[in-house]
Structure formats: C-alpha cells, structure tokens
Image 1 (cartoon, rainbow, N blue to C red):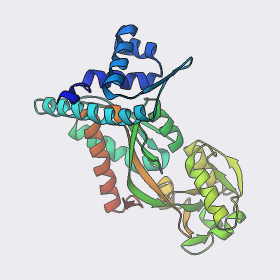
Image 2 (tube, helix red, strand yellow; image 1 turned 30 degrees about the vertical axis):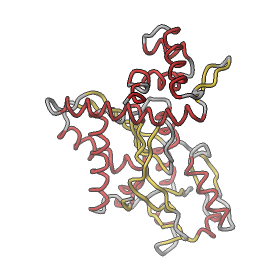
Image 3 (tube, rainbow, N blue to C red; image 1 turned 180 degrees about the vertical axis):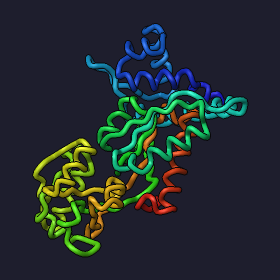
Length: 311
C-alpha cells in the first residue's frame, strides 16, 4: 500500500495531462496548477519510481519508454476510478452528458438511425453528437480528443486510444448492374479492367487494397480519388466508374437496383474496430453509448441487415 500511495490519482491525472499537452506549462494551464508545483509533482513521481519518465527539450516534453508504460497504466487506473465513480452515481440517477461518436459513412448507412433510436430510448439524458466521415479522419479526430469513440478500420490500440474489433466485412466491387459481369464474385486479376473511383491514400483501407492488388500480380486502375462518401456513390451511379466498398455502403442502392456488388476473389476482409479514448472510457455515459453501439451492431448482423460477421 505504501508504494501505491506514490501513484495516487491526482499525480496520475497530472502525468496524463503533461503527456497529452506535451509541455509542463500547457498542462499547468489545463489543470489550473502553478507550473512550479506541477514540475515538482513530476520530479517526485520520477523519484518515487526510480526512473526517468519524461524527456525534456526546447519543444516540450515527451514520455520515455518507462513514461509510455506508465501512461498506459495511468489511463487504466484513472479510467477505473472514473468508472467506479460513475457507477455509484448511476445507481442514483441515469447517465447524462454529451457523447461524441464517429461512424464511417459506410457503417453510418446501416448503424446511425438504429443507434440514435436505441440511445434516445434507453438513455434520454445522454446528448449524442454523431459524426460521419472516412475512417482515417475519424481516427485523427479520436487522437486529437475531438471524439469519444468511433468505428474505424483495422486499427490497433495506442497509449491514448483503445481499439478492438467488433465485426469483419468483405470488400466488393461496386458499379451499375448493366456494367457488372455475371456471377457473385470478381477475380482480383481483372480489377485493372475497371476504372475506379477510390478514397485517397491517406486512408488505411486504400493502401491496404493497393497492397492486396499488388500481392496478386495486378494494380488498381484508380482514375479519381474522392474523400466524400455521398458524392462517390453518386459518381458510381453515372455508370462511368466503379469502386471497392463494403456492401453496407450501398445496401439501399442495391435494394433499389441502381447499384450492384461482386465479392472480391480471393476475399479481402477488413476489421471494424470500436476505438475509444482511454481518457473517457470510465465515463458512464460513454460506456453506455459504447455498449449500445456493440449491441446495435450485433443485432443488425444477426438479422442480416448488415452484411458482416461478428468478431
């Protein structure tokens, strides 16, 4: 217990703030603590642990390897403390507060309305802020602290964000029905024959698809890059372009007969991950929203509304 006192919650919160802000002065302003006092707190933490936690230079501070390990533990400890606090409060009242959730445009097409309905019904005091965008943008906004949680593709956890797969889905070639060849699949070897409109290379899924084509001895014939989901779908409907998308992105259009899909062969599968900022994982409203998102996603998969497989 004596050692544990050296890692009390206020010290860990201060350490997290210093790491996130990248400077003692910025962290002191955020915490409303005098800069000299915060410097002393960091020095005492390093002394107690017997190791250097922060590298200091003219640009600010960054965690050492030991500091990065402590940061991950600090997020966990503070998160558990927040969870305990929130759970006890929640026993007396329902969760409340704003929760910001990011959904890729493809997943939003099937998830957004059911998720809004579930949260509105079960947790009316949670104020939902829903954002859609490409996975790469959502990940950046998570890292910047602008979102609490998001669905992203093929992302691993970092010191500040916890990410775990909740589903897997296969990518398809998408185009107007009259220009799609017969059959349920399309061979990767023929992809060069299709003029493609795709997201830009700043998004992980595009790079992964490029690599997938190269591994199978071909290359994607990308004629236009477009990072705007609705406009991409409209572009496909002109019949001049194809794209590689998950079926959920065009489920409504396929039902209406304006677009058709063919599964890639060999199969290309992406993981859909629920990513959450560690700093807010202990917040009761955020945890309830995350649980609801998982439940809604699983329900849509089980009833075949979402063409995906649970992780």
